[in-house]
Image (tube, rainbow, N blue to C red; front, side):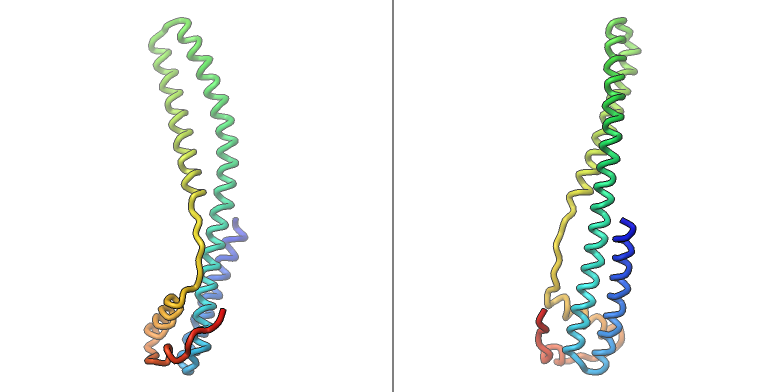
Length: 162
C-alpha cells in the first residue's frame, strides 16, 4: 500500500511537469505539442488516481483479513455468551439473563458495523479515459492561469492520436 501511494505521488509530480510543459508549448504557439502535454498530464493524473484506488483496495483486503480474525474471536466470545445464557436460564436469574443478552447484542452490533465498513470499502471501482473535452479544458485552464491567449489555435491543431 505504501509503495502504491509513493507511485501515486510520483505520478502527481509528473502531472505538474506535464502542465508546465503544456504552458511552455502554449506560450510558443505549439498547439499540437500542447495537446500532447495535456493528454500526458491527464494520463498521469488518472494513473495517480488508479494507484490510490489500488492502494485502497490493498488496505481493504488487509482490513478484511483482520476482520476475519476478529470475527473468529467474536464467534468464540459469542459461544461463551451462549454458555453463560445456558447457566443463567438454568438458574432463571433475570438480571443475569439481561446482562448476558445486552453483551450479546453489543457484540452483534459490532459485527454489523465491521461488515458494513468492509462492504463499503470494496464497492468503489471506476474506470477512466481521456475525453477530448477534458484535454481542451485543461489546456484552457492552464492558458487562463498564466494569462495566455489561445484563440482559434486550439481548433486548428486538431486531435492528437492516442
